[in-house]
Amino acid sequence: MTATSAVMNPSEAVSPRKRQVSDFSELTRAVQETGLMRRRYAHYWGRFALLCGLLAGAVALMITLGDSWWQLAVAGGLGLLLTQFAFLGHDAAHRQIFDSGKWNDWASLIVANLFGGLSYGWWLHKHSKHHQKPNVEGVDPDMLNGVLTWETNTLEKPKTGIKAWLVARQGNWFFPLLLLEGVNLHVAGLRTILGKGPVKRRGTELTLVSIRLVGYVAAVFLLMPVGLGFAFLAVQLGSFGFFMGASFAPNHKGMPTVGPDVKIDFLRRQVLMSRNIHGGRWVAVFMGGLNFQVEHHLFPSMPSPALREVRPMVKQFCADKGIKYTETSLIESYKIVIEYLNRVGLSARDPFQCPLTAQFRSAR
Image (cartoon, rainbow, N blue to C red; front, side, top):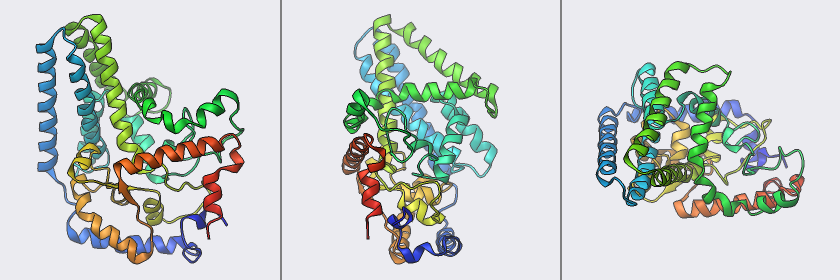
């Protein structure tokens, strides 16, 4: 049985192009009639004002506390706050905030580069490829093997020795490794901006990121002694990376993966490879609205507050079409991610005997 049959019925594999034209067009027409694609200016301006107010409060608290180890609590809160700014930049990059593409671009540049210290150009290129080919082995940037092994079909040779021991337990290291993700995000952005590849508005990106990174570090060491300053930066970067990773990982990790040659129409590709997270308003705030990942992948330019409203329609449509719609709790999603990583890690000792792939390919 091919990888295609692991995620759809054999009868559905006949004409993916026809399904894309009919099924997704039908769903799109129904969604557009609801008016949920309209811009939500009040929501986004209010959200931006709130975040700026909280950031100003954090800065004021840093100045007031001075040489106090309570600064580390501020650092942890700042990491969470900057994650919320990243979500806002994400929405602007997806053209969710303004009708004008130019306004959305500049909103992302300001929020991502100036507030977050990240590279909008780097993120846009990476994230666009992810949306086009979610969970496609060797193509989806979020599935490329590196420190963690996400899939074994593209491994050139099995892991051996200490690497094999570590990767077999990689799920156990997942959350501790997220503490380094903040540094990784800043470094990846700088590499793109300073690299030889094409970068739109390179000068603007470099200027905004430099102001953010240099100015921020300088402010920290002006307000605190050296030892406390380094501790502050470590906690802030660690919490930022942790919250970012903990927000994005549940959406696709542990869902089916396919090879680049597998043909799946747009609707099924986005639904079958994505996972929603239920749990109420606090989960939506924690994940920046990305807990409605299925709906976001189907309608990436839909404002995030509308995703909750369109969810029942999408879920019912998938049920009517016999398309599996996955939804679970946040804690359960973390368990799935850890188990998936350990399972793939064990199989990395022999990449041709991946138990997950075997499970899909033997399904009937």
